[in-house]
Amino acid sequence: MLFAIDVGNTQILMGVYQGEELRFHWRLSTDRARTVDEFGILARTLFSLDGLEASDVERMVVSSVVPPLDSVLERLGSEYFDVPPLFVTPDLVHDMPILYEPVGDVGSDRIVNAVAVRELYGKPAIVVDFGTATTFDVIDSKGAYLGGTISPGIGISAEALTYRAARLPRVDIARPEGIIGRNTVGSMQAGIFFGYVDLVNGIVRRLGKELGTDPVVVATGGWAQSISAECPRIQHVDPLLTLTGLRIIAHRYG
Image (cartoon, rainbow, N blue to C red):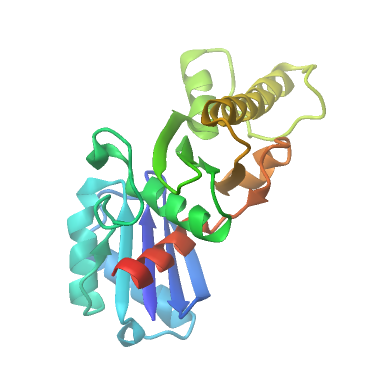
């Protein structure tokens, strides 16, 4: 079996593959202070609850944008699963030109998503990943990773509004009935939600124009389903795209 782990700034997504089949997956909060023993106990508990054994893991692949946890995950693989983890880096995916400058600055999650979209949905393509930040990544018609844009995620945008404006309350992020809010909560929800929808629509439109073609657009991440319903250019929503990319990378480049 393959144990795949994607470490984001807010959440950690873990999945277990049997061949191409995703058997189980779990989401955890990202805690930079978590020790290798805490990770090991937690992972083994999740395995046990779903009838899996740590000894069934033959390979482990990791994408991480939280450097303080890299050494912890390295030890997790060797001490709790007896396998050395394969960490995704730009030079690992040798058949996808990466035109980002410098190459080492591109997040491994963005590389993983680009690999998955190129394999599953074709090219040219745009990946919209709704995470702590919302990233837009562009793959050209030759399959090269061109780069993209990074915007504040909808969650931290809402938090910043509450934090910086003393009289504004914390609100749930939800689609309101209309754009004209009749109270403070409704006004904030309308501004946050529809403002973010228009941000996504606008950036996707501009990226397609600069690319000079009509790319396939795929969304992933926590807010993908809700926001994509308002974005006609997004053709596919794939919440587990990053896990799929990790599986492809482990089998192709591991």
